[in-house]
Amino acid sequence: MKALNVPACVDGWHASPLVRCASLARVLSADVHLDARLSEMHFGAWEGRAWDSIDRGLIDAWAGDIEHARPHGGESLAQFAQRVVAWFEATCVGRGAVHVVAHAGVMRVLAAHLLGISYENALQWSIDFGGVGWFRRVRGEWVLVRWNA
Image (tube, rainbow, N blue to C red):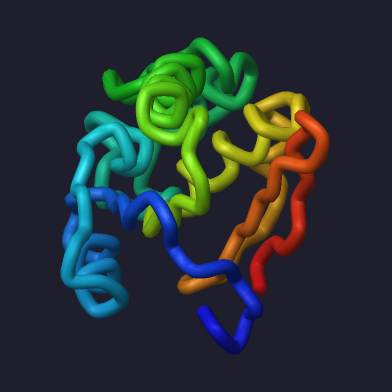
């Protein structure tokens, strides 16, 4: 974090309880709050499957209404976003620096929420494994300081 010039953590570390995120968070801080609301979007029957193993018609149906469709039986993007934003509102509003170790989908949803852009647009943003997103509140507005750093 020091190399990225990220502020010290004032109000805690938070992470998805899924192994990848929880393990990294515990390396970064001994005091981590794990919260299922920070888990990646649940893809139902598609969970863990390669895209080319899924019926193309189902993928097209999902892509045709990415925000509400759920042909996989898991969460829709709207449900996923509602879960992540609920976590943010309950945990981060009115606090100082909060560090979050989460999945790419969670980062994209938070970016869309904080910056006031559509979830569909934010889904196009690439984020590498281990990439950092940093947001700062300036005069009441959220500003993206770094993405995929």
